[in-house]
Length: 398
Ligand code: NAI
Image (cartoon, rainbow, N blue to C red):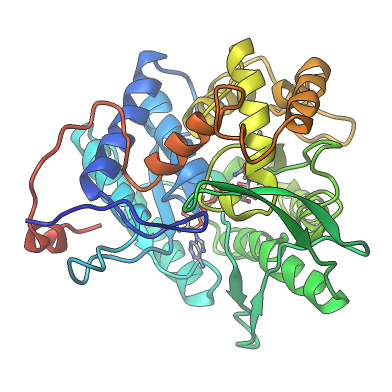
């Protein structure tokens, strides 16, 4: 029988508990079901569907709105007891099993979303097997690299400041330490490459390919998750390389809006709240912001996990009547995070932190660590220890 061991290097999770991942997906499904159903899209394509925001979106739309879904992700399956694969691999399987039990279509593509081949295969599937055109395309990719499908050149994103270095505190969950880190400014090449990977180019390529193939329904909506943050993280996020990539998504949304005019479609940037994910845990300084922010929001009753946030966005905002937009038309569910009292208290709290108290009742380190562990199937609520063999894990199909 396989032994599951939580194994963290820095702020990256290496170990996985496949059965814990399954329970975490079931918990998300229960959360959505507890809220009842809502009227939403019926045929959804989610690019980046296997974890955090993309997965939460899929769970909300399938179990809340009864949507058939296609999910694309890049994950690894089990090879040996030491190499059990990635959490997203098992999330895909758990999602599909649960959705199919309810009579929903849940098709997984586990391959590179940036390639032309994947786009073509997904289009062929929509035309031949999915049973209808797409009424919502969700773009929720987070990646450190992208191979340009035309040139074959691979670009790497960097999480860096721009112009000035940034010095600040960070935490290391492996060593449970609090330390000072310096983030160097990016070169022009690094800025351009980060935009190439995390900007909106691939989103636009997807929308062009889907439109050309005539697989988008009249009135189609496409969403893309952005982050703007606040004064507290501007130097390393908004004014850094990632901020530039997000600004590029805003520009590409304009192009996509033009592209979709004749089918009454819309591209919507959704400025989402800060949450604990595989991608966000490795943003320098960001975990310190989170342990302060979550403490304040938890006390106010406004702290959300990805499933809570995404379910609210689709159920209450996009397909409900509580949408809040900013002056340039972006959806702003992050208003709870940006609330001025929340930010003032977060700032005050973060200023008090040091290596002795960062992991105390003063902060939400415990919440952050638990949410981080949950991502790879550890510390999951309602999880009961079970036995499984490597062969059984290998036999699971996505
Ligand atoms: P994540 O790392 O949990 O998920 C990324 C997804 O992309 C996974 O499904 C992964 O398999 C997939 N993926 C990566 N490379 C791929 C490839 N080449 N082909 C196919 N699939 C690939 O990331 P997270 O945090 O959920 O981020 C999703 C989006 O939400 C990003 O645009 C991020 O900037 C945005 N966002 C995140 C916030 C946060 O606090 N985590 C806040 C606001 C926005």
